[in-house]
Image (tube, rainbow, N blue to C red; front, side, top):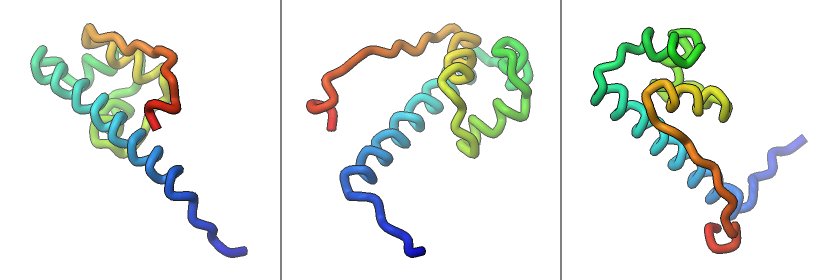
Length: 90
């Protein structure tokens, strides 16, 4: 079995998604720092293990949408999902 590279457009979308995830985590980190929140307190408020917070902030784990939303809510922020015209955003 040989490896088949994904099409260039797929790779471009993946890179955009990684950048958007990076932007979300950077925003979360800034709010944590601004408010002086400890990781263990964030974990407790979001209902996740402290280790989970650490690996997410270290960019070693990509959380599901529910966990990401709980982390943002725990620092007083909200993630809003809205429908967009995907042809314009590709």
